Amino acid sequence: MPMQNVRTTPIDGQKPGTSGLRKKTAVFKRPHYLENYVQAIFDGIGGIAGKTLVVGGDGRYFNDSAIQIILRMAAANDAAKCIVGQGGILSTPAASHLIRLRQAGGGLILSASHNPGGPDADFGLKYNGPNGGPASEAVTDKIFERTKTLDFYKIIAADDVDLGTIGTQTLEDMTVEIVDPVADYAALMQTIVDFDKIRALFAGGFTMCFDAMHAVTGPYAYAILEGELGAAKGTVINGMPSPDFGGGHPDPNPIWAKELMDKMLGANAPDFGAASDGDGDRNMIVGRGAYVTPSDSLALLTAKAHLAPAYSSGLSGVARSMPTSRAVDRVAASLGIECFETPTGWKFFGNLLDAGKVTLCGEESAGTGSDHVREKDGLWAVLLWLNILAETKKSVADLMGDLWAAHGRCYYARLDYEDVDSDKAHAMVDALRTALPSLGGKAVGGMTVENADEFSYLDPVDGSTSAGQGIRIAFAGGARAVFRLSGTGTQGATIRIYLEQLETDPDRLHLEPGTVLAQVRGAALALSDLTAMTGRVDPDVVT
Ligand code: VG1
Ligand code: CO
Image (cartoon, rainbow, N blue to C red):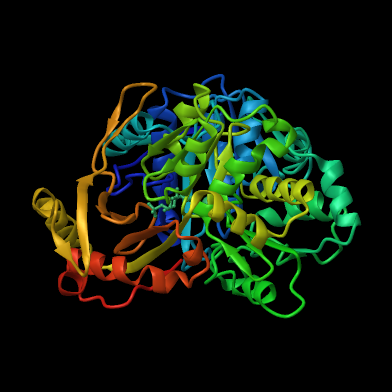
């Protein structure tokens, strides 16, 4: 048998971040780099002999070659079977669903999500466990530990597998099953939202624009929105996945989805707009003339989910990541359900979902999901919104106005300072951490600090703790600033400052967010001394 044990030396810096390992594509293409990490995953999870794995990615540059390497290594490591999306394509939520549906031992998803793709851009790889969700911190640590000692990996010599033809092939003793990447996912969606109601909505002349951003959701959106649901041809834009995402950032926010924003804010805007990211797990929602922040979208979905069949008997609870605005907390309180606060990253929702403690969860970074899979799910969020729009017959702007009138409005913004000198970024956060005990009661920029701490999460299901998950500063009067360093960047450090201001005065629900947030922004910059500490003045991206 043409099996090789390839000698290798451990490669430094393979520490997975918020969502798997992300590096420059050139790093992943270095000799043995991808192979080392894949072997560390296989070893870190206790081997894959006899197991079935789901494999697929977002179609970015190097996706197909990397899949060929993974398949040859899976065969050499005695996996029983790999289920691969046709053409190597699987959105992150579709992969999560396939793992669950086929009761696979886990899956490998190739994506750097919203980061750009191409030879000079980013690549990524994440392992999801048998529940379909991102590996827990404990598993991630095991994989990382293994990268430090690994001195050989296993691979077979074989021709490339034909990824284009649906059906079953063999690679040595391993079965490779190529599946339609969309079919099972589309079938799942039909069990969650009311397709007939949404079909009737579109048949009645409702218009929509879905921006797939040249990324993985294109095929899903064509099949479901224009196919199953009868949305007009042309509803989906940028729907052909391309290896470099058309040269853009497949990041669904008002900055990178500008084409969609211009449509939605311009004359003759469609009724509803949405976008998704590189691997299809994020969503942006925008109504005619009305951008919805992801935090507000989570709150709205929580308030109205009962209008969709899967959630008609209510939600068991909800969860949000710590920097996500507290809008959903207010809705949850009014519904009498629990709202959990978790660290950033979907892996922390898994236990809550598995234990049935929460039905919906979400993050400020355009991630929303439910217990139907164990990842955030962009298209699912869009379909749930459509279901709600079909049932209420209200516009997006009116739904949001109603929500704010009932619960108050959490004005929200995130400031990103990218590619900051890593030492300086850490020094800034360290200084803030050191200052925490002295901040209580402090007056700064016209505001008073009410409470300041560093978030540490105690998982209510398995009792594990995750410390150092971001610095929270609550001000009197309903404002909050959060500071943390990104765990998904591939160059320098990215500082994220999250700003929030609650307004309950009915006369202050429709103001310009930048104006409302000016005071807390000033206070956050003063407290962190960001400019002096990092040399940076303006953020690179504000969302
Ligand atoms: C960012 C977001 C976080 C999200 C993560 C993965 O992480 O802030 O909310 O879970 O990306 O998203 P960070 O550490 O850079 O802030 V994605 O769409 O991988 O899959
Ligand atoms: Co993503």
